Length: 400
Image (cartoon, rainbow, N blue to C red):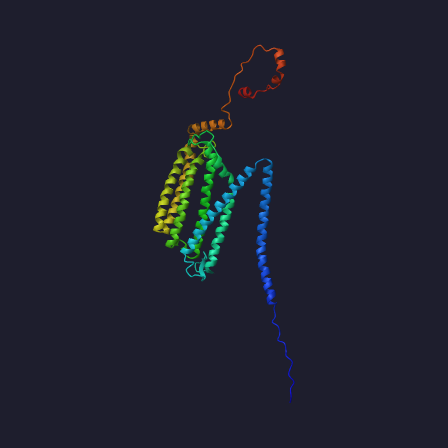
């Protein structure tokens, strides 16, 4: 029996969208991912340009165009210098922490770390990170911190300009014999540098400690001193050396801050600031120098216990010497005989106040009273007569 050939049956098309349409959608999504950040950056740039354009036109009308360009160049130079320094400082330290932890030992293989629960050391949250992801995280963290630090430095342009172009007043303070111009022009910029370096170093110590803790090169068990590897301890010793040296510089600057002290009976340096706090500050500078020497030794012979004990002793000496001893001395020694102790400093305070308000140049002239007043004289000086007080407070208070 002959059979008729059956008609070909079309195979069903696979479900889903067309591959070409899928490729177009992926390209469109990629473009959107690029356009959104670009639009945000463009809006920020337009806002900055229009703001600077407004200032340029306004200052141009006042013939201050040169000042405008000076301010602009100083602001962005400070921003660039701070950004580059902080980025390199953070990137080098975080990168070194990853190298010490062996994060790049496996090439492109994931690196496993652990986050240990403080409630139970047995509970661990394992996270696998590739070296590429770690590098990107280090760069991103360094960029963010550098941007924040540079933005803060950008706003302190006036401190640099005062430091760069400030002069002297020809008047010395009675405590150190330093020209007053130093306190107005130089000291604020030195304090800005010292504070900025301290903040950046503390952030680097925190970031490096987190990296070492993640890779379990730095561990802290309850009720015992933390344990760390030799490389981690050496790295932390270098950062602490920078921090303590920076504190020593800050303590030297704190000597000049005593002219703003509020410990005494008046605003300014008093007996306690001059005879107690100054000595305590010099002692802290000496302690800081010894701490730097011990930290330098600890770089080559790393011992974490020495770091912990040394940090505790350093903070204890600071609290006792700088905070407690001056307060106790002021309360129990100076205040019972305050006038006797503070009289020289009261004289300095009055003299400086007179100079500040230019009262020391006033010349006193006496006009003897006339006994032959006549009605004609009184009529010619009627304005003066009308200004005479009916009740003169000076003799009135004496009589009362």
